[in-house]
Amino acid sequence: MRIFRENIVSPDNLFVVKEEQFKYNDFPFHVHPEFEIILILEGSGQRMVGDSVTEFSGPDLCMFGADLPHTFYTRGLSKDESIKQIVIQFHENFLGPGFFDRKHFKQIKDLLQRSSQGIVFDEMTTAVIAQKMRSLVTKNPTETVIGLLDILNILSVATGYSLLSSPGFLHGLNMEESTRMSKVYDYILDNFRRDISLDEVASIAYLSPSAFCRYFKKFTRKTLSAFLTDLRIGYACKLLQHNNLGISQVSMDAGFNNVSYFNRKFKAVKGQTPMEYQRQFLIKRAN
Image (cartoon, rainbow, N blue to C red; front, side):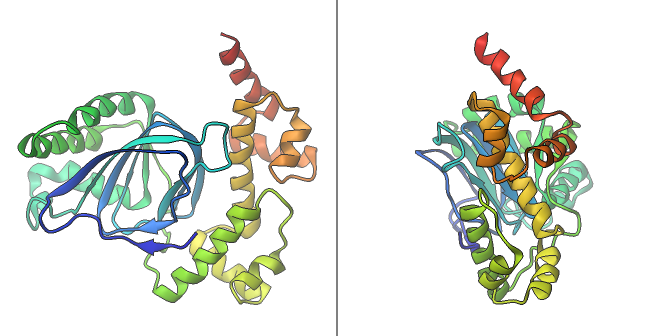
């Protein structure tokens, strides 16, 4: 999965609004100079934003700042890999240089600054914005400008949200660093469900184990072990939500060799045991 740079909005357009549907999403970890509001209508999998790895399940609403590495990954993570989404992408100055620097737009300016870490919004905000984004797809150009400002205004005053990436996340990578880290991410995503040694991952980056530990933590703000644990817990959540597998089987399929360790780590991250987590979804399916 190569980290690559996109340039999405052409000089002829103020911004982009599009509705998309894919059989699965394995889109590369990528950056672009545009801000992005993305509404996942259908689909579930892993959300990777900066140094954050979390699970998502539609409806899901996020906002990403310019040049923040991100991707949504569904391939091989759930029974239904398909994904449907609406995306808005825009430059900060799409209405002119310094437009949002005016005091009238202070709250929106604050929102844009917060989005540098990636923002995920709660269910209530998502429900409100989902309706507006659905209608935005069919509006004329003038209406879309008004509609986007309305959406930004609502998001700027919303209190139900969480920041995804660490405040100090370094995403201003040069091309050499980007290519190296891309290979590491690709290898981890392909192999996280088995035991991965530090030596083998370090070899992908052509670094010694000690140098790789420093490099990886500088980029992700996490150790390799912690990063793998987050990824495996997220995958385990998908298995628990959509299958009737036993806890030991989920533990093994998600890359944990020890069920007791899996239980401890899962509870530390999710605040409940794997069995308690699974029971919620079994009840929902029964109803």
